[in-house]
Image (tube, rainbow, N blue to C red; front, side, top):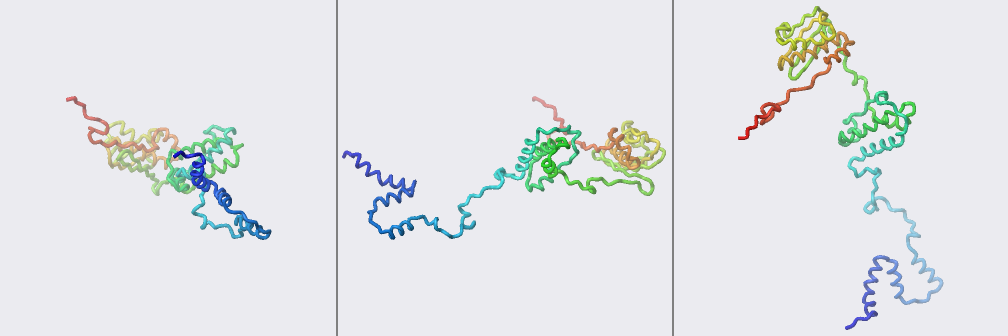
Length: 314
């Protein structure tokens, strides 16, 4: 049977009405009223119908809904734009410092050596402030910006930058930052402890004529090599105090070279108790800093720590 245009139009009307109902509900109301027979109304009846057709929200005097009533449909907006980064506090701090640097990067600066000496918070302290685990590489980005802001000329540095720098300064406590001062005992002796590799040397230095005893024996009897003898009393040789102090030492552990270098550190520490002004000279001689190097362990499949067996093709 041939389908005409009129028949096709009337067959599509129900589907079109349903689509318009979903898209525009007020259009559905208009179509429903269009098929309703019209009737005449009086003035009072017409006003009553107008009031009934007016949306109820215009005359609704009830209080606004509470949070408990709308929390299921309300979308929460984070306060920080870095909320979804996983570490919002760090990124907020970083972005704030970047903004300060961008705003004041044209101010005159001084060389880093001439800038005010400041100690920033350690990584552990910053983690305690933020309350999250921050990687060292990320915290270094903040330190780099702080160092750059600290190089601004102190005569023109803004208060906003000063406040930002003060937030990251380390809290210095006098009793903690200062090392305990050593002093001579009642017999005028100074004690020093030195370590090198697995060797430990306990040294006692007091004023005398240059006698040196190691484990109750003369120095030449304990250390056969000339290099080890010089290393044991190198702080006295470097400061020309060889004939002014006597040294008694007790060494244990390790080999001869380790024991001699452990004595170097112990004698230097004890000598600085007698004469603190010798510390710069002893530092230049390499006697103040403890050598942290240790013997590397042997690995499985290696002859020693690094040496491999000779490769044989067959």
